Image 1: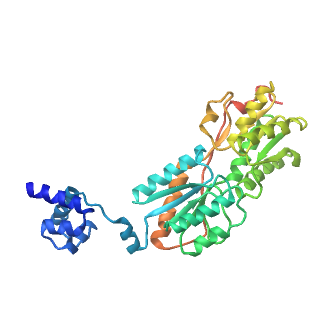
Image 2: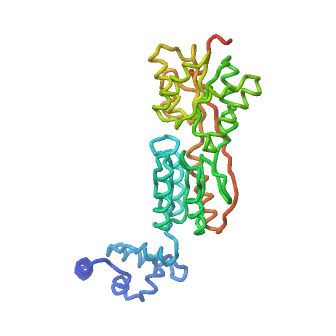
Length: 351
């Protein structure tokens, strides 16, 4: 026992413990030690356990960087999202991290803050860090995909989630934004609302294009006019909700507002309430994304719930499939959203 304590102190004095130190302690060839620590089937279970115990006793740590360089894999994936403060993205990250952890992968999480320039730099950073693949929800400003194509040209897989991308050989994990938006708008129509304003995201973004198309399709089905001035485009931030609400008040006969996200809907509701406008009696509201606050504000907000945690898991599993099989394909996986009807759209006296 004293011998081990003395040797351990000597190793600590020398610096980092190596497989040669373990080999010397056990009198086992260093190549066998290396194979055992890498769980090689060529080494018996008993020997592996003996070597593992000694490695733990001496405080051995594997040189993961050297291992990664040898295999040309870092077992790390990059994730780029617009904003981690959004419940949807935080929940998606939880699904990504859980799946990656189970597969033995680390995750690097980055925020684009909906900036195209920042997104470009993040792609370069992840490429420099040799991540094995990327899961991304593109920024609102992204209309040019050259930076993404350069990454894919290096042979790495890239999975798009929530906000789809329609360039060549893309894999998307999304919901049916058109159908979900159609159902929200039709719900308002069924509740007697006729002059429905739509707070839209930037129409350069495919996701917001699809939500706007769903809104228009519902109006068209029920023979309601599609009025350009009733479609108010913005980045759908909190301050945009307030400005959009002011614009809506200047439009004739507005009795409902459907926002393509909850954040703008909630700030608009708060502003209208400050102007003594009753919700939903005078103006009804519906949002999109089911942010946690949407259930507790007064009145509670009708919205669309997206399966964000599942979306994160599905996107990660697809990424690993592509890594393991060395395949890149055009594929779109569509998950099912749910319309959650709450008090903000429940008109007491239908027209």
